[in-house]
Image 1 (cartoon, one colour):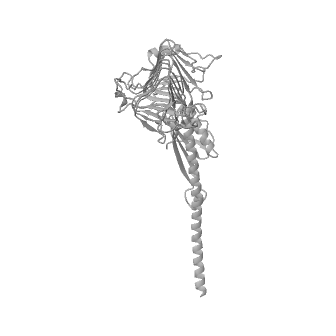
Image 2 (cartoon, rainbow, N blue to C red):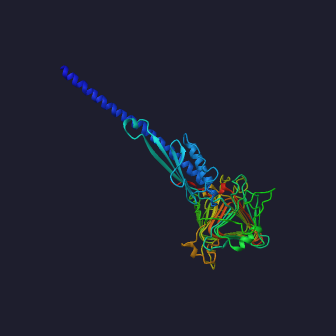
Image 3 (cartoon, rainbow, N blue to C red):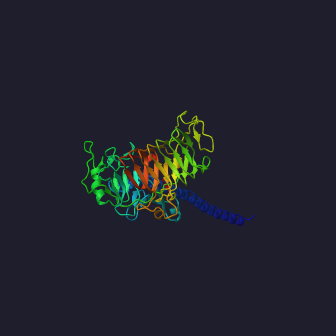
Length: 505
């Protein structure tokens, strides 16, 4: 081989090595800078997700228009998730805007910016941006940085109230009414929950009348009364007939009231339906029952989950096995001192099956108590059988009857679920001046203990007749009437709300 040829080949090797170096460098740039960019975007998304979830969680302090809590919670958790950032203090004291900042992005240092938005009553959105500096790309003539962004929106469809009254189409209509001397509605909250949660929210008015009372059990911790369109009678009656008022700072254990005309509190917006999910049917234990069931005073019967196409009447003892009970016809009537309750988790009380008891079950009663005894009672309202106003199918207690049930997370912590009257629109189906259905009727000295949520968003619920009741969790209905000298109690407990908050974007 000639000396010239060898020199030529050596020159070609240098070119190949140089080109290979460029290629390797490019691969290195892609590997390092692209990898760093990916990690940066992942970090941004994690921070946005965390901020949106915490902000949505704090939306429960609404509808009082104070956005400091959700915005500050979002900022705190975003800063905790991003390096070299710090809280600018924008929302530490007051942050009333629904979008922070009003335009653009709020700087939290190290090239990071955030934007916080209360997009609707129940959703919270966070956008996080970062100007990412490349490690090698700038040295090769590429742009030295790139701005990346990540967003997340979270939903919090629960409200911080013991009673939610949704009727919204008759200005000044009293969604919560009481009548009859001695009638009392007691509002409480579970110890350890956020102070101020609980209480009552009405999309219209609240009026206890002049001979009944609304009592807040613990001064300063059990919520308040909010009304969107308070009528003249309610403005005068509520302050005079309400004790344990939360809205003022307690003095020596006494909660003073404002003068008539300033209470209940005015709500800035009406609440829409919270749309809590329908309890899912567990198909492995659910059956269809077409015949009426009657259990007289001396009777003990086991009721089993499933679809009931006829009535169930209990004057003795009805024991509910865990699951969902849905009435498409008839309903559940507990009367004459009868009791319907969830089965005991103590061995030997209800399991194995009691001697001499009856059962409607299509399968055998378990020999040992279930670990989760929770039930959900569901009713589909309708007119018929000589009844109108969607009162043909009812869940009723009367004559000293008792209903005692506990929830299950399997059924979204819902104990009683009243469907909307069909066909839509439901407002035109139930022909009464209150519209809605009339499914839940507790009267005649009846007693109820419902540990979970009562969800009856289009039902005119009636509680009264000298009985006493406790609802732990929440009651959501169209209107509520407490009457007849009865005592009803609602204790707000966020542990038994039908939570389904989470990221939706």
